[in-house]
Image (cartoon, rainbow, N blue to C red; front, side, top):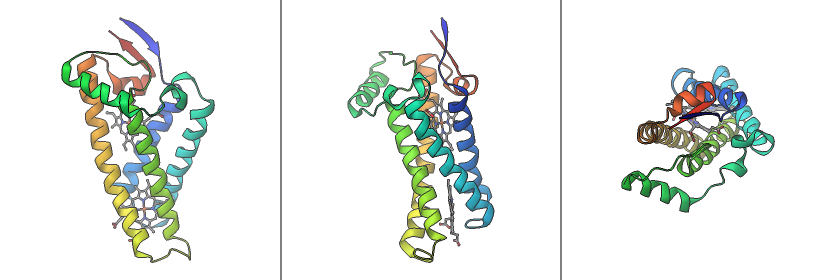
Length: 172
Ligand code: HEM
Ligand code: HEM
């Protein structure tokens, strides 16, 4: 067993703030109202912060450490089926794809949400529909994200959610 520092405080704060802000807007704020808009701008700010941190942040926070690779992601799926275990200190290949998907989806939500408040796109149906569709896509993605985190935690014997809280991974 060895314990390694993986996620810096900014990544962890970013993650749980994003969870809170997304949940607030998807379930608790009144759609379109002032609080909803400010929470939405917070999501936009968090995504921008994370994009910058992906370039200049600590080792495992950098995009260079988890470039998207469909091939490696297929390999990981194969390992999940075959039982072969390969431990990733930073993000796994499947995790990487999900992260890019979630960041893009959050950016799209903020963009379409903002568009609805502008003169040019106010009351435009396809923008409203896209905003709603992105919410559904985000919810589906998050269910898959959490399921994958649980499945991989059990399969590899690493408590991944805990690592996103403490910053440390204990590898078997
Ligand atoms: C994570 C970000 C966001 C989430 C999860 C979210 C979620 C939602 C949801 C669930 C609805 C209801 C959709 C429906 O009725 O089909 C909605 C509507 C709306 N949202 Fe957002 N939203 C986000 C960001 C934003 C932002 C940044 C703005 C504006 C600056 C915004 C403005 C609106 C408006 C104007 C509506 C339409 C309200 C109406 O039906 O009159 N949203 N949003
Ligand atoms: C609104 C819901 C959620 C969103 C939008 C979300 C989004 C993200 C994003 C963007 C990352 C990448 C972190 C980074 O590198 O900055 C991430 C990673 C991660 N998330 Fe979430 N997440 C959500 C819910 C959860 C929940 C509920 C859990 C706990 C069960 C969780 C556990 C994790 C873990 C463990 C990682 C690191 C995965 C790895 O080891 O590669 N997430 N999530």
